[in-house]
Image (cartoon, rainbow, N blue to C red):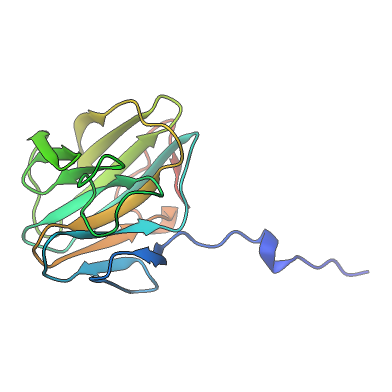
Length: 182
C-alpha cells in the first residue's frame, strides 16, 4: 500500500509575491530579489506570506547605495509607495530613520550597500525591531495588529534587495525565541 502526499499539503517557499508588487518592481532570483526602478513616488513588494501571531525573523540584503526601505505592510497598503509611505506600512529607511504614514523619525544607524537587515516581527506583542549587520537597532514600532507581510521598496531611487526567508540562506543566527519565516 502506497501513501501519497497532496501537493497542496506541502508548504510553498516564501518569496516576494509577483502578484503583489508595485508597477516599477521587477523580481529575479526565484522571486527573492526585488528591484525598484527609478521613479516618483516609491514602490514596494510584499512577501507571499503574512503573519498575525508568533515571533518571526528574516533578513534582507541591501544592494543599493541609497533609497532602500526594509519593512512590513498589511494587505491594504499601497504598492505605489515605499514601506512606511502610508498608515498601513512601516519601514527602516537607509538614512537611519523609521518611517510611517509618510513621516520619518530618527532610528538606529544608516545602512549602505551589502548591509544585512534582520527583521524581528513579534506579532504576540505587536512590535518590530530591525537589526543592521547583526547590531540591534531597538524596537522601531509598537501596536502592530492584523496580518503583517514582509515588505521591501524604495523612494524615487533605483533600489535592490534580496530576501532571506529560509534558515539555510540566513547570514546571522535566528534570535532566541524567534522562528525563521519560511
